[in-house]
Image (cartoon, rainbow, N blue to C red; front, side, top):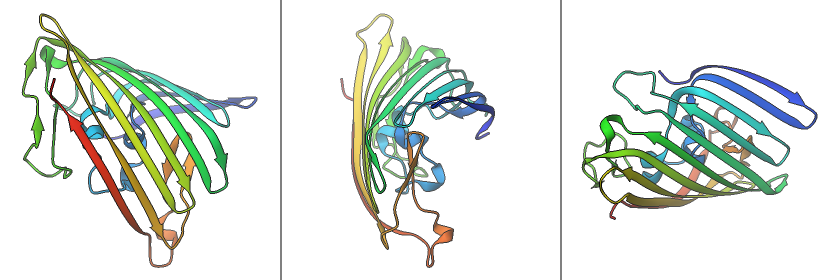
Length: 232
């Protein structure tokens, strides 16, 4: 299953409300919340793949104004058998210190906590290629770990065809009889749309131009610095 939910939206004055029930992406990563079909690179950053909750079955509420928004959710397992498990909660807030035609600055913060199946934590990452079997970095299995708590900060600048984006995560595995396990990671990326086509932004998430509407499609140049540290 991917997205499988029902959603109600309404507005009171300048405030926009949204209530969603079902399976949806949890609010704890800017890159994860962006459309999968519009990924900047062939794989998400290793920190995103390691710490983002992704799609879970739950209940979510969003409240937003012209230049800010907050979202909160409670969630359980992923609908597809054998995938992510564990009950948890997530909270995200974002703010636009500057918003104008062709020039948008976004800042955000998020926090998520969730239980771990069989009280065991394992964090690991592929080499920026989702189909690869090899893991470049791996904690191994850490039994006796009840929950994983992750905090992330977000920064985004859209200037015409340019997009500069960065996130940083820090996570703590809360252990029963041992010291807690800490890890961290993040990325910074720059993407330029050849042809000068501008980026779009809505509800705390950026999106590229629609390639199908452009003569010759959409071509981009991009670079990313990616870091993940699972040593404690």
